[in-house]
Length: 326
Image (cartoon, rainbow, N blue to C red; front, top):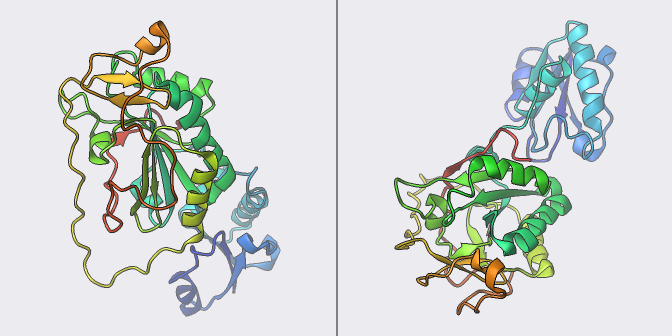
C-alpha cells in the first residue's frame, strides 16, 4: 500500500512514522511541499499522513499549497482512505472536513527552536505606538515563518485606563496581527511579572531570543530598523545547538525590579520607570519632556551588556487578551 507523507518544513520529518508504516506493510513516500514537490492524487495512494509545521491551517496567502492539501484530505476521507494528521496536519484535517479552526493562545512549546522577538509595550506609550509596534509588525511581515514575534502589554502605570478590553480594541484599530499577551501582576505589585523577570526599564522594550532560548539582545527605547533587521537575520540564519544528552540544569531567573510607586516619565523613545512624580500623560499637556539620563539608543547584533550570553531566557508569564490577538 502506498502511503503519502506530506512534509511542510525541513525540521518536521516523518521520524518514527515511516518505520511504523513500513512495519505495517505500507510503502511510505515523503512529499516535500516545502521544496515544491507536487501533491499526489487520492486515486494514487492507499493512505495519507499529514505532518506538522509552523504555519496555520488557513494561511493560504503565504502557502498556496494548503488549498490543494485540504482538497486532497477531503477527497481521501470521501474515498474511505486512512488519514493521519499530526499537529498542523490535524488542523488541516479538521478544516478540510468543515470544522472551525481558529488561532489560539501562544504556548511555550510552539516557540522551541524558533527565533523570538518580544515587543513589550503600553497603549499610552507614544514611543510604542509610533516606533515599537510598527517595527514589530514589519519584522513579522518581512521574516514570516522564520521568526516568532510576540507582543507583551506590560502595564506599570495608568492601570485603570489600559485594561484587556481596551487592548482588544487597540489591537483591532492598529491592525496588530501578531499574538499579544497581557503581562500578569502578582498581588498588589504594580510592576508586571514578566517585565520584572526580564529586567526591563520601560516601554517599548525589544528582546531577541535565539533558537536555543538564550537572550541575545535586550533594548529599551527606539531601535534603528537596519540594526534590528541585521540582528534578527543573523539569528534566523544560525542553526540551533544540538540537544544536550545530560539533564538540563534549572534556569536562573532575572532579579525582579523594585519600584516603590511604579511612577514613570515619558521620553521621546518611550516610558521610563523613575523615582520622579512626572507621568507619561504629562507629555501631552506640557510639551516635550525632559531627557531621562541613561535612555538607551541604537542596537548591536550582539548582547546587551546587562545580559550573560549563557543565561537562558526566563519563561514569560501572562495571559492572552483573546483567542486571536489580531
